[in-house]
Image (cartoon, rainbow, N blue to C red; front, side, top):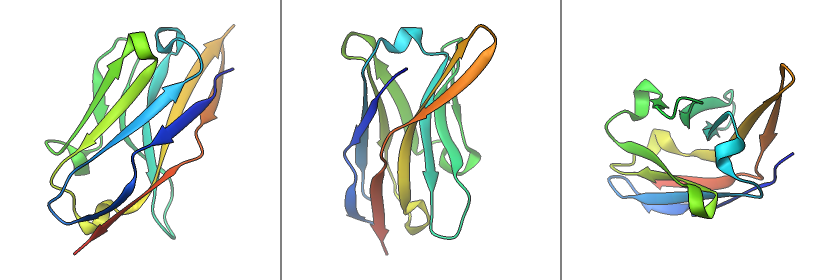
Length: 119
């Protein structure tokens, strides 16, 4: 199991920046996939960015070139740097950890942090 705690959300004007943090209760090196999802009102939760087991980051097309996912293994923390924010980036952002154990994948979620981008 793993507990995830997000921080860093808030209200920002369009064009601004925010950095989200996700602190894990265990080594993120032991987590198969770790990353960020978001859910806007009335929409399904969608992948924003994630590190797969190979360590190569994967981004949603809508955030490529604007968002950067990074990690600090010593601090067991994953970050999401969000630049050039747009009103359509407004959503609750969730940290996700997927752990595979004996062939079975389990997903863990943080409590979410609200990001609101005003126009």
